Amino acid sequence: MRAVRMEKRGPAKEALVFHANHRLPQRQPNQVLLAAAATSVAAGDWKMRSGFAPIPLKLPKILGEDVSGVVLEAPTGSKFKRGDRVFGCTGQVLKSGEPFGTNAEFVAAEESVLALIPAGVSFQEAASVPVSGLTAWQALAPAMPLAGKRVLVHGGAGGVGSFAIQAGWAIAKAQGAHVTTTCSGRNVEFVTRQLGADVAIDYTQAPWEASPGATAAPFDHIVDTIGGSYERASLRLLSKGGSFANLGASGPGVDKVSVWGIVGMLLGAMWRSMLGAVRLGPPYKFVMQDCTASKGLDQIAALMAEGKVKVHLDKVFTLEELAAAHEYAEQGHVRGKVAVTICDDPAARWLAAS
Image 1 (cartoon, rainbow, N blue to C red):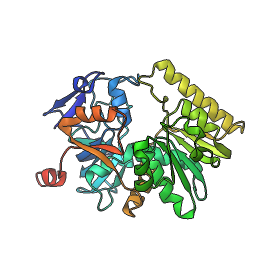
Image 2 (tube, helix red, strand yellow):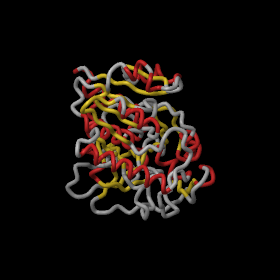
Image 3 (tube, rainbow, N blue to C red):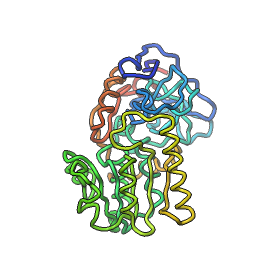
Image 4 (tube, rainbow, N blue to C red):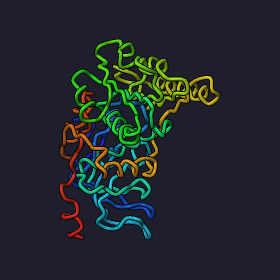
């Protein structure tokens, strides 16, 4: 099969190598074998490859967790059948001994992480949802139901931020939810008119936390995709009884984190979580993504089917261009998501041939 494999850490064009005849993954009894149509470049992908995050990996390894495609084989009694269009987050990247990810023509994934793609949603759009969508949903979950609440989402133009804005809007907007986000000046119109944020704060006009959008009234829930100084400032903006979701971000402008930096971040999150648990601080959740579809993907798929959540693709690359896709995402100015096409029509190519 065609696949792109990470051979070492480093710059994308040195670390990522295209293979035209890579060995196929072997489907386990509880897994579904997919003919992949598309994947995406999540922040975790390029951070893992670049060495930004010193997480141990057994190399070589096929990266990628987002996938969309068609079912080729499914377990006995599965809710999926051959030919179904599905998408999901496989959770394979953090399994250090797992050599296969989703940057390949064939993917073996646990049935529990997959959901049916809603009608009218393209493979590229579907493949851009799982990692960001699940993270956003699980970050909003502590504050649900969101009716009548004020929500602040940092980094609203990025993948996780954009889904958090849309999910927050779709879930409770009709009941009076109010969504504020931070973004650069060039993205203000994008997050308000296209994503549905009520207020966009231009973080380049420092200090953002002193802006009218931040100080108009306390926030009931804050989703932090940036960390560092943003977290410290945000905690001061919470309402009494408000809650906070930390997505494990290392702070603005950080080029690389050390092992001790990760340890410090985790200890800090544990401490704040403990304070929240004993009511000496606000309820605080460190979001460790759960790839199970019922933990957010099924719900987002339903919202997509209703047209309430839409995927905004910044740019689409081919599998052979994956290194360039990493470089583009790594610049940090993506508006929405970066998708990667693996096969335009996997059903026509693989189902008819087998």
